[in-house]
Length: 130
Image (cartoon, rainbow, N blue to C red; front, side, top):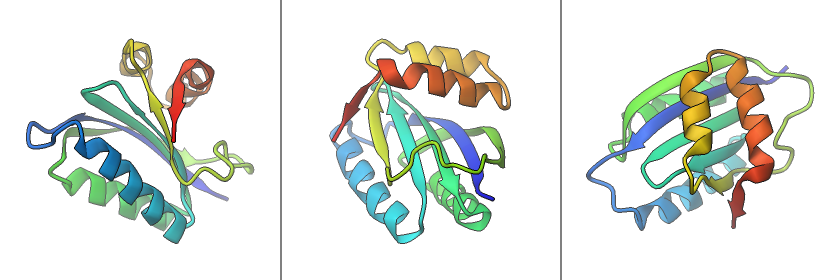
């Protein structure tokens, strides 16, 4: 059974917003190599990512992100065993722009498994970017 983890973080002042595209490219390559699927939501300042895959691979990636100086205020808001079917299918990393900040505010108020429900409800309204 797969494992899932959702974190939030804030873009470091050391990171230029143009660097987010490079982060996405690197993350997609890493996720393919480690059999992970995910969605990354970004509102111009804050990140939220839902990662799913093997427990060790997910936790290893979370540790790398927590140590990445491009992020600050890294906070795991949910982790646990995922359902039988992955929510993000073949997406190594779907990148979504939360231009109004609605998702981030909803996630800020949610806890535990409710975070997953909030993300699932909000994804159709987000702009998925290549």
